[in-house]
Amino acid sequence: MLDGDTHPGLQIGDMAPDFSLPNQFGEPITLSGLRGTAVAIVFYPFAFSGICTGELCELRDNIADFAAAGVRLLAVSVDTKYTLRAYAKAEDYNFDLLADFWPHGEVAQAYGTFEPVRGMAGRTTFLVTAQGRIADIFSTVTGQARPLARYRQALEQL
Image (tube, rainbow, N blue to C red):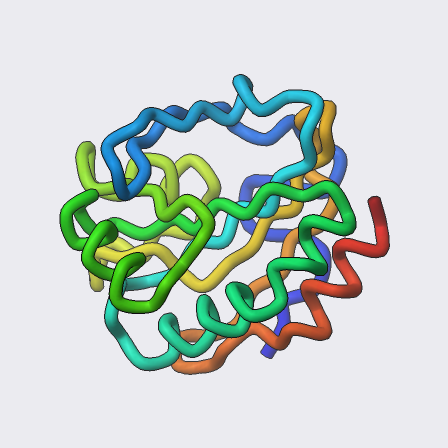
């Protein structure tokens, strides 16, 4: 079930909380360092899990949609950079997988999408404008993939 255009704590039009996380190669990616470029921040529970892999493979196979809209894709989970490097290699992901490992889920918490009982990020996407403002928010319940059509709808707003 999609939750519409808001998420607890953050709303469309808010400045996206800044963060710096290592990607699968250990390189720091800082949101404020990407100003001037729109960003899709895709939180997902765990690398190598079935639904997450299906979602990220669909994004990989449609990365041209993001490129055409001038949007950089950042996928964020609570996994380590080592796990994410193996995951990216296994699935041929050509976008950044960010490790929100330690402090555990700190960025997911800042975005209001951390599930403390399960110790994982929820399945939520934030589309951030080149100026750093949240343009769209959407999510699904645990066990349900976000539809590609919803990403395309979000990209049309930029």
